[in-house]
Image (cartoon, rainbow, N blue to C red; front, side):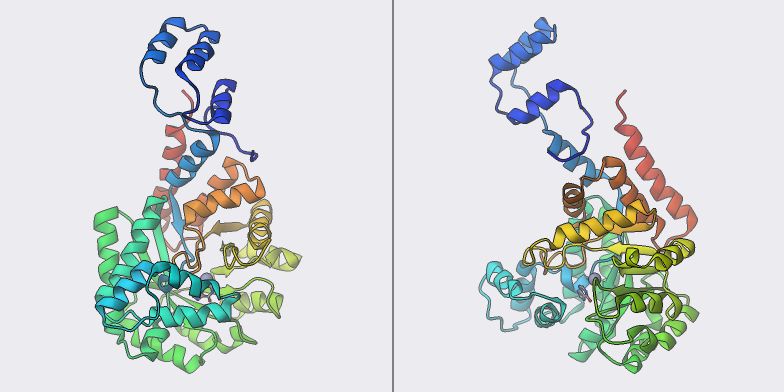
Length: 402
Ligand code: HPA
Ligand code: ZN
């Protein structure tokens, strides 16, 4: 049993949850309620079909799922589920060697690290050709995220991957804009996008895609980031492009993957050279006390994403979830995020919070802090931030025992 508290901690409910929601016979229900001294009510209850009662775990899951939260580190392309990939490939007449979603998942299971994953990621996203495709990928993600309590999202996308295979920026942005509009209208979910430069491509390429994207900077594209596998001295490589992005009014973030060569130097590099407001992952921050102090002093957000290859690498989830807990305990602004939930089978964020809680024994208060942090480090104005935090307050108040 994990170290968490449900809304109804009394012994009766615990008894019920131990037996499972539906496993108590009416007679036992009657007896149990009789012990509580409510014979008449119990008799009526025993004669009527009782609604299923939630176990502690179910209550906690429902709490986490409904908790308003922001997703700040997710790759649009990596949200594409295998079934959607197959549908897109089919309608675009693109050959695919996979007959079923499971075949695609088998292929994805061959990935064991970021570079081997990126090869498959590029192969699969190659099916997306039209604005409709990008719209469908993004909207499917927004619907799924919304079902897990996400009310605000900032979504990474990789324009260079699409430009390199001949998809014009106009097509990509038309799809992203349509999905943003639909998410607002259908779900009340507010979404914006983070233009990501590929770390293993040139700075000149990045500068080109930034200039070409200027018409969409504003409500649609609100920031820049860096992803793809780390290369040596990547912060220095992109210093000029990030300065330009800042001058264009864009927010700045960068991946610093976990336990990489030169990890600490790279964390310092993105802070000092790229002037980032957030670090994606950033789970090595506790390894350097000076880094902890700098991240705290500058209010830098850390978008932890613990699920990379967690099914392939034993202990991966526990290690990364533990690091997230450590950052939280240090009082830093860390959130949990899903990264590539469609392709890497990394969990969607509600499931992920639940799993992180399970791995680390976080309390409900800790989970709420993660959700609050997600809004604290979102790129929104102070009035919006207060409104989202107010939604969390109301959510908690509505669940207070009366
Ligand atoms: N890291 C993790 N997941 C990703 C990346 C990355 O750089 N790019 C696309 N999905
Ligand atoms: Zn990522």
